[in-house]
Length: 418
Ligand SMILES: *Cc1c(COP(=O)(O)O)cnc(C)c1O
Image 1 (cartoon, rainbow, N blue to C red):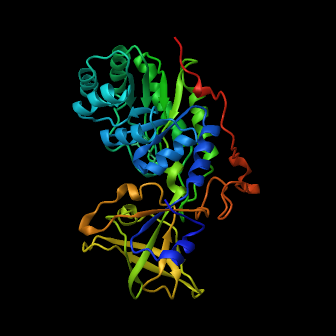
Image 2: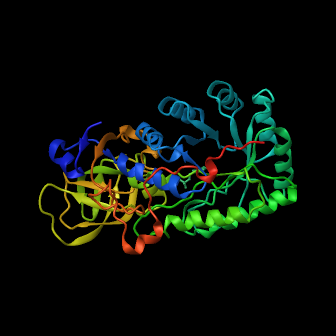
Image 3: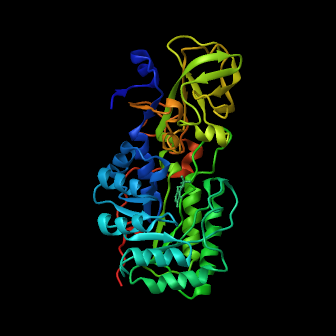
């Protein structure tokens, strides 16, 4: 992968025809280290947020050795790019073939489930293995997330106790609980509230959990969506954990996707045509910009031009390259008023659910990869635009406690002994 100092250097050197995923491994490294230094437990990367090999390899180099996977292709990807890493198959609905292959060929031991039939399926497909970590996905009621992730999965409060008991009896290894408060969760206390719900289910079942997995949902920064400091999220989780009735050896897990990778990549696109306030780009909703179309996600944009731009900003909307009229991004995206055909735009905070969402519909959607040495457009890890390895911590961000050494002997790293 070629490295450029900045997106502008890349444009100057080769005026790319295809969209370029601009990657910043150093930014990812800072995020990975932040989670390990500040979260009192095990950090599993949720691979679906960005399954690019550079992401897996960078996380591995920076101490993340556990992965939340949801399919065999994700399992195979992690096995190839982070050999020996531990994986948890956290999709609550899996095929028998996928369960068997994960267990027998890839050594996966942790499996999520949210109903009795899936539990029976996991037991069958692993030849009634006794060494499974069975994680019961709970449906939790929380608000404050931009995206709900409890519409489809999660056992109800009524049915949870019986399922927890069945999972407890089915394994000699760990039985755990998990939930997902929703992606881009804007309210730290949502975690503590979900953990209280998990606690009630465990008490009603009369069992202890060996694993409490608080899922993902940790937010990133987008225009109009500046979340509280990430430190407030881990504080809420640590308080929630302290309030739960658990063993001394109970492990705390989290599965961040978005917050780990969002800042670490952006997208460089080319303006193919301008019609009034509409810009026709070489990438769109069938490429990396699914969320910009379908959820009107407010990604930050800036003009990358070798030369002067007019100072006045005005609102634009975007069209993607396919012939489908749904391939539209309403924005509004604020750009200099003289933006024109041949210009390049950088769309920021695209590391999570960007390239991960791309299809090749209509012959578009492919991206090139290039590494850039500048900073992200916005950072919740105190990163300045040109100052990555020594992040700047602003006075008002002092609460964020950014630390850069690897944690030693963090509570969750203790392996359980019984
Ligand atoms: C998608 C997903 C995640 C990651 O969620 P983010 O909001 O990106 O942090 C974690 N766990 C599970 C089970 C998921 O489905």
